Length: 337
Ligand code: AHG
Ligand code: MN
Ligand code: MN
Image (cartoon, helix red, strand yellow):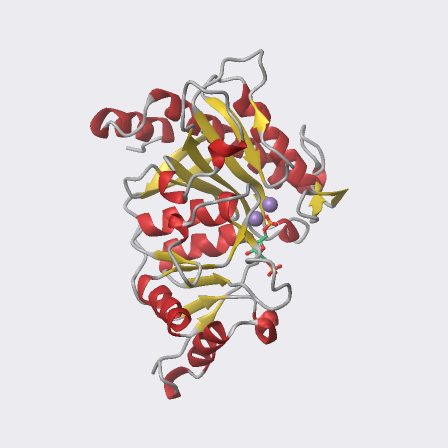
């Protein structure tokens, strides 16, 4: 018998008291939004009721990155789906300059939703997997109005996190702090069906993911780790490594949750003042929690990502995540350096 996302959430609420009904509503609404984004992604150049997803939107986001049409469509879908339910106080997105407070005409809830509406923008036009990443926090003081300060909570404070990958299958991956579950979209039924529970990342791996074209800009510890992997059986690691780089974090992390591996987007010397490329709130925190919940690890080379106290909404961070023993090794190369 198949278990729908709705049933999974109800059972988590009933048996474990983990998901208050407002949070359950929030997660169902996010899943519904992902379903519409998935539909638009599938239609591609044919265009859906949401429009043609291909190509540039001709604008830039607050971080100076070119926005694709689908970045904006996905952002609008998530805002519209979530604004009226009464479960949220505010939302923050990679594609918006500042937070979006739930308008006065709707009741305000106590949750805060953060998202990267479309991860892997460079892959939209070439028909390679992309996704949506989300993270949920609770407002610190339920009696006070919401502001950007409410979002400045470390990843350890997340109450739910996940992503939806739009690939050969559309898969929603979720944690509410009780392990990681995966749901596959059944298009005939129109619902997400539980296809894997208790996802575990093996502690050891022979696969790494990093953008090798940046090698000359890397810091010594990262260079050392990759050099040792490349030496294979003849080198200090005594085994051959394989490499993958999809350029959609969502797809690279999905592979790691499925068969292990280590993913790195480290700080490098191109722009020394920039902590890294990936964003703490929309990418690193939700992915780090999922990885830890599956038995893996995640650091910025110096400390656990989930312990970082954010100071800015669009803050960037260096990321090393995946199979525990490999992440610990790369981190130890940093701390020894
Ligand atoms: P986004 O499309 O949301 O801006 O994120 C892209 C990120 C991440 O998904 C991916 O791992 C990385 O950027 C790819 O970067 P490079 O193009 O430098 O390889
Ligand atoms: Mn992204
Ligand atoms: Mn994005």
